[in-house]
Amino acid sequence: MAGADAPLFKKILVPLDGSPVSKKAAKHAIHLAQVENAKLVLMHVVEDIKQGGAIGLQAKYGNVKLVEGFKKARTKAAEKWITDIKSQADKAGVKATSEIVPDDGTSEVGMITSYAKKNDVDLIVMGKKGQSKFRQLLVGSVTNAVIHHAPCPVLVVR
Image (tube, rainbow, N blue to C red; front, side, top):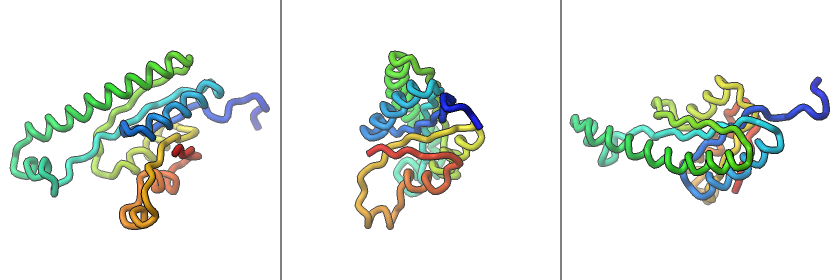
């Protein structure tokens, strides 16, 4: 058993989507990482192009340039706000890395939980958007699914 002063968390994963609540979760994660002297991993999953949407239909009919442009724009946007969060972590003396990964088709939840498992993550800190109970029943939420499938504790920030 570790001593009383041993940190509980050595690696904290923060899945981000650019929303205000995910940025708020990142602030909490930075504070926890500072207290625990933990590493922070800022992660964004670039969503897969849905076949039913306008861009998905373009992909289906061979317009690969449009699809690649969409993915490139999403990645570039993620890099910008992740860089802002990394600079906040740097100011707090927290070592932060970033992972911008394309959805491999398994799901955003699968990407987050398998990353946590493969990379020995001790804690996931993520935001929860305020969906009604009815909407959660219909479509679920990424946060709820991560809570149920994560290999480690999950801290949810509202």
